[in-house]
Image (cartoon, rainbow over all chains, first blue to last red; front, top):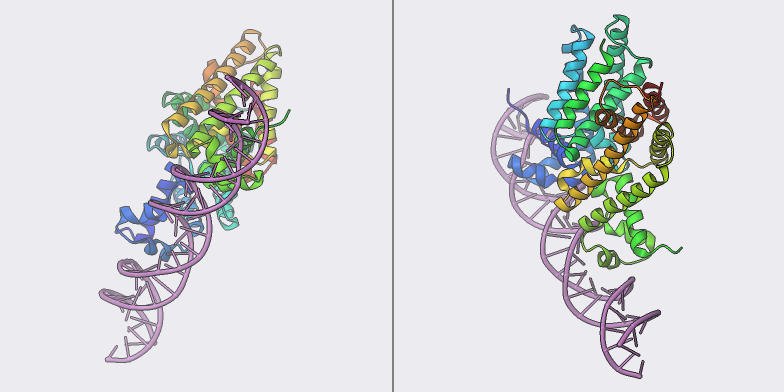
Length: 185
Length: 185
DNA sequence: TTGCAAACTTATTAGTAAATAAGTAATTTA
DNA sequence: TAAATTACTTATTTACTAATAAGTTTGCAA
């Protein structure tokens, strides 16, 4: 199916946001590669904050589709797929969307913050459920409750996409494996 | 002792960097509160990247003093002090300097990146040593090697300063305690 | 006391930013 | 087929940005 201009702007905006940072790219960085004019971007997203809202919503949609696809798999495999997804983020030289928004948090309008909050709770909720299921099935071990474990896994893995930009690639695999080893019997 | 203008610029720059993001603040945001002119900031730091270098170097100095002061304390207490320091970062509505630089990484010049890399390795090295000592003394437990454990602790705690901007304060204490509980016998 | 360097200010520039108004072409709808 | 809507372009504005050149003040050193 053909990708609409609107969709292309969102995808490129997401790319720039996670590669350079929200305040490090401009509408010109979007319009030029798409061979459209500055004003065409403003037609779809009157302000840059409107674009940020759309990017956050887009991530919610993608995550919904992801979690539906994963629903039948067992907890262990769901977690592995989730961690591998973050590995692919790192390999494409991006950082996680949560961290990208978080560091520029106080330059975001409330409507953006709300969308980002909803996306983040979606991910934490999904992870918590997965962990609780794994615990109930006796596949996982931990002294902490499900949400705390979820927070630690999410923290570790999304910080890793940032940290390995500085320390180098080998550390990503270390951390990814340590998360699995720690949790899985 | 009186703080020099140069020092004030570095401190305010650091504050803005970690509250708003590197590309979200301007020289005007620095000169106005200090009641000096734009050009005075450029006198001390010809370019914004020069300021970023100075901020990173400043963090190395602070961390050096911190680690010297901690040298005599036992591993457990060093770790607790380290985690409490990150709690204070969160309470002052900032994020950790590593994450703040990492998300805007590709908009930073090589000279900045090098300084940030050196600071980061300083922290990871210090944490690794602390953990190895704790293991040798039988105070800590872990299946992973010291560097991997250090990476996980650092990831968890610095991501936390970002994550709790989104999810709220209560999650910070959860994660902080879980790091300690997991490691300490 | 002269000279000179440090730490600024005044004034300006060139470039880029987000944003908007007005116009146009193509498609859809009534 | 007339009218309205969609998806743009052209053209411009306002504001801000980092950066620099040239001049000023202050204190110290020769």
